[in-house]
Image (cartoon, rainbow, N blue to C red):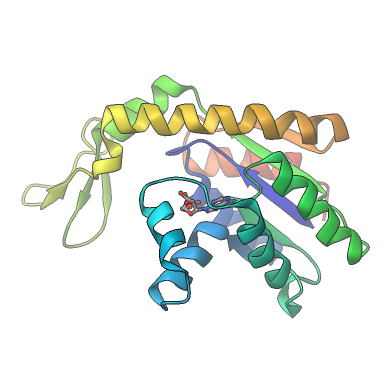
Amino acid sequence: MRLVLVGPPGAGKGTQAEILCERINIPQISTGEMLRAAQAAGELPEHLGRQMSEGGLLPDEVVLELIGKRLTEADCRSGFLLDGFPRTETQATGLDRILEKQGAAIDLVVALEVPAERLIERAVYRRADKRTGKIYHLKSNPPPAGAELEHRSDDHEDVVRQRIENYAAMTAELLPFYEKRGVLRRVDGVGDVQAVAERVRAVLPPA
Ligand code: AMP
């Protein structure tokens, strides 16, 4: 199963990716994580590292090369889940070319949908305990007394609104591409983790 998972910031994409990959036993491939690892290992050219920390997208050819290499590794032979890639139509067509060489194609693109106001509410009330890393919501999952709370800088309302707008622009370009092909599945991402996981499972073909 060759999957792409997309979802706006704060929609719980990471959590759903983990559940899905474990369930169908495929690797989760996140270009963001690969790039951060390359940066930490000093393998990412400085100007690209700068572009990343400013929140800009890296050039299509850079990510395509990275993904092209990764998808030839043995653990990807029977499938994978892409997270954070493709982000542009050029990346999507580049991905097609990479897979064509292997006689393969993307089977399904799962798009988690959560209304912007919900995402903003989640982010604005989200707090992390600095010592344990645990995540709380000031209203629906309040932290225990004595927690050392931290509000991530990218969880502030103006930043979240900007990230949601960037995501909307990206999906406006990307989703019609997969919709035309009949592989796009939109999934309601509102609700608890297990309920959303069940909806995701329901759009996959039977094992
Ligand atoms: P992420 O963790 O997916 O938000 O990615 C972190 C950063 O890595 C992004 O802000 C971009 O700078 C870069 N990046 C990750 N994936 C891509 C991609 N598919 N295309 C371009 N840049 C990317």
